[in-house]
Each structure stands twice: as C-alpha cells, then as structure tokens.
Amino acid sequence: METQNTNFLPTLQSRKVLTVAFVWLLLNLSLPQGKGLPYMTSDVQEVSGKSFDYIVVGGGTTGCPLAATLSEKFTVLLVERGGSPYGNPLVIDRKYYGFSLIQTDEFSSVAQSFISKDGVRNHRGRVLGGSSAINGGFYSRAREDFVKKAGWDKGLVKEAYGWVESRIVFTPQLTPWQIVVEFGLLEAGILPYNGFSLEHIQGTKVGGTVFDEYGKRHTSADLLEAGNPKNIIVLLNTTVKNIIFDTNRKGNETRVRGIRFIKSDGSSHKIHEAYLNQPKNSSGWGDVILSAGSLGSPQILLLSGIGSHEHLKKFDISVKVGLEGVGDGMQDNPCIAVLVDTMPAKREPEPPLVVGIADDFRFIIQAGVIPISFNASRMPIAAKIAFPASKGKLELNSTDPRQNPSVKFNYLSEEKDLEECVKMVQLLEKVAKSESISLFLGIRPAAKLMSSADERRKLCKKSVRTFYHYHGGCAVGSVVDKDYRVYGVEGLRVIDGSTFQESPGTNPMATLMMLGRYQGIKLLKERKDASNSCSQQHP
Ligand SMILES: Cc1cc2nc3c(=O)[nH]c(=O)nc-3n(C[C@H](O)[C@H](O)[C@H](O)COP(=O)(O)OP(=O)(O)OC[C@H]3O[C@@H](n4cnc5c(N)ncnc54)[C@H](O)[C@@H]3O)c2cc1C
Ligand SMILES: *[C@@H]1O[C@H](CO)[C@@H](O)[C@H](O)[C@H]1NC(C)=O
Ligand SMILES: *[C@@H]1O[C@H](CO)[C@@H](O)[C@H](O)[C@H]1NC(C)=O
Ligand SMILES: *[C@@H]1O[C@H](CO)[C@@H](O)[C@H](O)[C@H]1NC(C)=O
Ligand SMILES: *[C@@H]1O[C@H](CO)[C@@H](O)[C@H](O)[C@H]1NC(C)=O
Ligand SMILES: *[C@@H]1O[C@H](CO)[C@@H](O)[C@H](O)[C@H]1NC(C)=O
Image 1 (cartoon, rainbow, N blue to C red):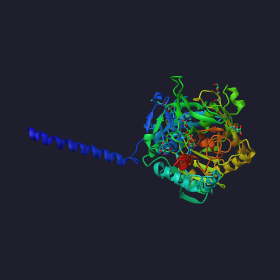
Image 2 (image 1 turned 180 degrees about the vertical axis):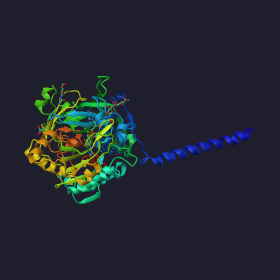
Image 3 (image 1 turned 60 degrees about the horizontal axis):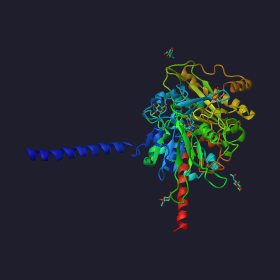
Image 4 (image 1 turned 90 degrees about the vertical axis):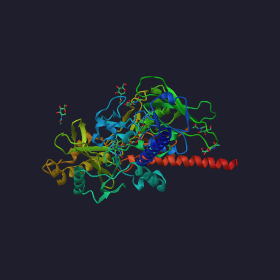
C-alpha cells in the first residue's frame, strides 16, 4: 500500500504541474502582449514621498503611450484623476457608446462636462484612457502636411502610428446606417470614394476604429501593456494640484523637483508629494510631463505659477515663470449638426465609421446614432470646420484642481469662419437631403431646404456646437518649444492636445496616441545619447 501510495503521489503532482503549466501557457498565448497591465492603485500613501525617473500627469490618450514607452528604460509614475476603465460597461461596450456623456456628475463620472463661456456644452475624459475612453473611437492619421509643419521625422511618425495600430485599431464592419451615410456623402459630391483607409485623404472613406469585432472599446490604457509594465506605477483617483520647484538651486532657471497631489474624491484635503529621481550618473534628470489634456495641462501650469502675472495675481498665486501664452490659442472646431430622424427612438447607439472630407480638406462630415437618454437616441449628421481662425482663452476659475477652468472658444467670431460655416451648411444639407438617406429613413427627399445664405448664417450663429476636437492652451512656439519643453523651466514638458495650433486631420486621437509614442522614443534616445557622450568624456 505504502509503495503504491508513494508511487501514485508524484504522478498526481506532476499531472497537476503539467495542467497548471498548460493553463498558464494558454492564458499567456491569448494575451496579445503577454505582459499584462502595470500595477494600479488608488492609495496615495503608496506613492507619497517616493521618487521616479519620470512622472507623467494624466493617463489619457497621449499620457498612456508615453508612459509605456518611457517604461522600457526608466521608472515611471503615471497619475490619473479618474478611475480604471476596465470592467466599466459605459467605457468598454459599444452598445453604451455616448451613455457616459449623459451620465455626468461633478467629481466622479468618467466624462466630466463643462460649458464654455460661449454657452456650448462640452465634455472631457476623467478615467484612465482619458478622452479615448468616452469618444467616438474613430481613428484617422494626420495628413503629411501636418507632420511636415510640425517638423516631425516622417519615418518615426509612421513607425509610431504603426505601433498604436497593431495594438488597438480595427477595421470596422459597417452598419446599414453607416453604408447609407456613405452613399449620402457620395451623392452630395464628396468624391472620390476611397474605401477603407487610415490616411487623411479627400473624398469619402471608411476609417479605423478602437472598437473590436466584439464591440469592445480599446482605450489608450491598453497601450500600457506594450512597455515594461513592471517599471510603471499607475496612481488612480488622484488629482495633481501643481508642480514642486527646486528651491536650493543657484542661477535663475527654475527646475522641477516633483508634483503635489490630492485624492480626487475630496475625502481628504491632505496634500501629498512625489519626486523626480536624482540621477545616478551624469546622464541628466528626467522630467515631469503634463499630458492632462487641453483643459488640464494649462490649468496645472497656472496653478503652479506659470502664466501671466496679471491673471495669477487674481488668485494669489506667486509667479514662478511669467509665461503669457499659457491658456491662449484655445480652439474648438465649430460644428453644425442636423437631425435626420424625425423623432427620438429606441435605436442602439453607433459611433461614426465613415467620413466625408470635402472642399480642400476644409469640411469634415460624419454621422452616428447618439443616445439622448437611456431609452432614446437621435441620428445627427455633423460637420466641422477643419481650420477655424477664431481663437479663445482658458483661465482659472478656482484654485481647486478638480474644478473645470473657465474656457471661451469664441466660435465663429472671425468673419472667415462664419462664411465657411454658411458653405458647410449648404453641403451638409445636400448630404442630409440625399435620396439614399431619405429613402432609408422613409422621409420624402428635398423637403424644406434652407433658402438663403442669410438663413444659414443665422443657423450657424444660433446652433454652433462642438465636434469635441478642442485643442490649444500650451501651444508649441509660445508655451513649449519644438521638443515640448516648457519655456523657462527645466525638467518640465507638456505633451498632449494642448500643444496643437490646429486639429490634425479628421480626428485628433490617432495623432495624439502617435505623439505619445513618438516623443517617448525621442526621450529614450536623448538620454541614451547623453549617457554615451558622458562615457566618452570619462572613459
Ligand atoms: C465625446 C468626444 C468624442 C470624440 N470623438 C473622437 C473620435 O471619434 N475620434 C478622434 O480622433 N477624436 C475624438 N475626440 C477627440 C479626442 O478624443 C481628444 O482630442 C483626445 O482624446 C485628447 O487627448 P489628450 O491626451 O490631449 O487628453 P485626454 O485624453 O483628455 O487626457 C487627459 C487626461 O488627464 C487627466 N487629468 C486632467 N487633469 C488632471 C489632473 N489635474 N491630475 C491628474 N490627471 C488629470 C484626465 O482625467 C485625462 O485622463 C472626441 C472627444 C470627445 C470628448
Ligand atoms: C475611483 O474613482 C471611481 C470613479 O469615481 C470610482 O468608481 C472608484 O470606486 C474609485 N476607486 C477607488 C479605489 O477609490
Ligand atoms: C547611467 O545612465 C544610463 C541611462 O540612464 C544607464 O543606462 C546606465 O546604466 C547608468 N549607469 C549607472 C552606473 O548608473
Ligand atoms: C423612456 O423612459 C421613460 C421613463 O422610464 C419614459 O417616460 C419615456 O417615454 C421613454 N422614452 C422612450 C422613447 O421610450
Ligand atoms: C466659476 O466659479 C463660480 C463659483 O465657484 C461658478 O458659479 C461659475 O459657474 C464658474 N464658472 C465657470 C465658467 O465654470
Ligand atoms: C538668467 O540670467 C541670464 C543672465 O543673467 C539671462 O541672460 C537669462 O535670460 C536669464 N534667464 C531667465 C529664464 O530669466
């Protein structure tokens, strides 16, 4: 008996081991990157007082690919004011697309709403993944023109787009409504038909999407798996208040030492700190990098005393760097939308999958099915002006970093924009009244076309809204240099949509994800070059 037992036991154990090994192998094979997500915590105590090579503020569209890339060589703290997108149906399920925008609250919803001083309601992401967790998920690269103007390396741009696309971008299956819209765009003369393409080209095309074939959204947070997750700590539900400067330095240049942060839920007023690592060798310091978006990044600069003297004085913030451009150049592409359905109905929401790029790239037209409540949706066709001239401004409205700053976009304040809007509405009407769309919806075509340019002008002024492509506030050339370093400060960069002077191509998400990867690679290379030249000096 005893011998039998001892013989039997090892067999059972080795079988178990084999089964465990097999399951482990299967699990790992089915994960696309095999590395898993980095460690995430909402406990500020775990990070308070610690140091890192890089600190990225804002785990959004740009911040996640940036942090992932830096983690290949360095330790990274990624701080996000919102929670995790994983397991949240409002973020992940395509059938709930748009629901996050109708379920907002002041301090915790995944979408934070704000109303610009123009009176236009708008939204921004407040969750790991940022606005890529609440948006339409339409993925389209920037034009070559845009890349050239930005002075980026064409080859590296292509490589960085590819890095994003191989992980979270999918070729969509068109719905009947999207096919009908496609016909409507062609009927309105938005030609040629380009089929599926990730490139920003004139005519009508199908773009990429971050929703996979099972209707699951892949946000930029998924890109965190692509770096070295072991080198990243993601601190969730934590709002960065401002930047800590090094006070023990000689000379007049201000150097960044770390960040101050609070719990996002307001359950405690305690302020915590985290720092940049003192470099071990002479390859230099890392940076605090703001990727908090077009509203968040200028807001943090202002709260840190980087901005115009006059404005900071109003909030009793002592000026560290007098940088006038912070908060300037805020733009939101004016949008006009027409509802083609006659009344709300219970239809499943649909993100846009096709686009019309018309009139020498000046007009962009898309359509979706957007929920207006939990049991009703509408079918708008929306058009945006791609290159508006009107610009606005962002200012603080409070020293509480959890509050929205106040922002005014000055929609259509320049005559040129209003004239373009009139032309755009004319084109939009052609699409909306096309036979394809009318037949599909069972409406008689060509009913009540708008008559005069004057009527269209009035419509533009009265019903201008957002296409959600707002940008600016920390523009390249006025707040950051072409390497995204904040002027007058050492160890501080801004990398996100706030640095754009214009919105790239149809939709900015693709280019912001690319930018996070691209600038991450540049930083890795820069530090490598610096340490190489050091070792040459001291062999
Ligand atoms: C409703 C909607 C639909 C859209 N549809 C599309 C589309 O289909 N295709 C497309 O290409 N673009 C679309 N866009 C635009 C696109 O999503 C944004 O331009 C882009 O995501 C902005 O990226 P970002 O990195 O600049 O900022 P975000 O992605 O907004 O990231 C900023 C992050 O910083 C965090 N943060 C801010 N302040 C702080 C702080 N003080 N402390 C800590 N964290 C902070 C935020 O919570 C957020 O996660 C849409 C946008 C919206 C809002
Ligand atoms: C983080 O914040 C989100 C959104 O407010 C909330 O749902 C979640 O429970 C919070 N998580 C923790 C651990 O506090
Ligand atoms: C010096 O820094 C470089 C780059 O950060 C790193 O690769 C190298 O290991 C460092 N050397 C030492 C001795 O710390
Ligand atoms: C949606 O639900 C509300 C109440 O739950 C109801 O009053 C309303 O009529 C419904 N709308 C539609 C379009 O079904
Ligand atoms: C600014 O703050 C005040 C008071 O806190 C508030 O009433 C107002 O709505 C805010 N304005 C904006 C534009 O957010
Ligand atoms: C620092 O001082 C030098 C010389 O005194 C001056 O040239 C430079 O502009 C100053 N830099 C800043 C950021 O004020």
